[in-house]
Amino acid sequence: MVKCARCPRPAVIKIRYSKMHLCDHHFSEYLVERVKRTMERYDMVGRGDEILIAASGGKDSASLVHMLADLSHEMEYSVIGLHIDLGIGDYSERCSAKAVKLFEEVNIPYIVLDLRRILGHGIPELSRKIRRKACSLCGIVKRYLMNLTANACRASKIATGHTMEDLAQYIIKAFLLQDQEQLSRLKPVTKGRNGLIGRIKPLCEITERETFTYAYVNHLPFTYEECPMFRERTLDAEIRSFIKRMQYERPSIVISLIRRQSEVLADRSAKNLIKCAYCGMPSSTSPCAFCKILIKLGREPEDVINRVYEIAEQMSR
Ligand code: AMP
Ligand code: FES
Ligand code: ZN
Ligand code: ZN
Image (cartoon, rainbow, N blue to C red; front, side, top):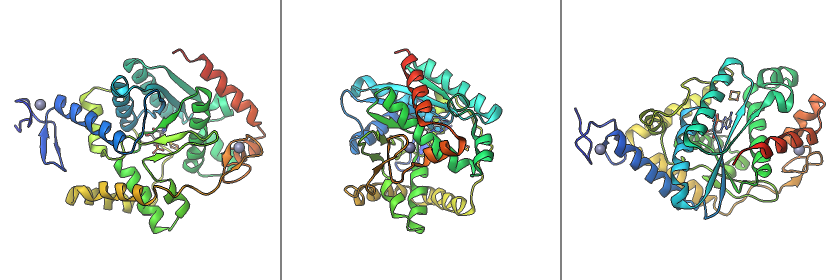
């Protein structure tokens, strides 16, 4: 049995960068401290911030909710949970049940948006109706609804559970494809402006192995399932496996990619935004990507906006 470096209890994980073995208790303490340091390093939160935490029902965002709720008193911010029920059959039901159980357990106010109530359809029907791949549609809808909900509940930041692997994968892919617009957005923090709420990724220096261990040893409600609509492209799979290999062979290189990228892009903001003529939100196109979907569905942005505001108002604080 390998012992914890800080107490006589059995170790549950070996931390690759420091080669340190830790037990469940000391690993949790260590990871929360690292997330706190990440938030400080990138100046993610300030006193009085109200953070909307987007939780999917998976391990990464479950750990995020638990850690941010834990740090909220010490760092003097408040939190609200958000889960979007994507209407992908039983899979979404199980994700929603886990997310709600988690919000209840950590005892934070929360909002659940059901896509079928907001747009009349879940992701599979939307994908068929609009003739667009489920994952890209889902990304547009989630991003828009997160921002709308943050406005509706007057949150000052949106936190997502993107991990080190997620961010590194997007950075490498955008670099290979020379997608400068995308590259400029791939930072641990993006500033808010004119109705676009700023986003933070407090787990950007934490690995999936660590979020899984944290969620597991703290008995957090989360699902192990992958989205049934997800089809990984070959390029994404190759980049992902390259990152995994790097994390194993040279643990510090992936973190330094994320840090360097964030410095290089520190003052290069995304291209100028215009106002969407339909919903009034800042966007690089008008209509914005979300309103293009609404137009195809024959729906008015006001209906969606009013519905989300109504749901946000009903939230118990
Ligand atoms: P993904 O886009 O699935 O890689 O998820 C990235 C992050 O987006 C997660 O860590 C969550 O913070 C957030 N997210 C994904 N799906 C949902 C959902 N259904 N409801 C709320 N937040 C979500
Ligand atoms: Fe969006 Fe699977 S989570 S399509
Ligand atoms: Zn210990
Ligand atoms: Zn719009």
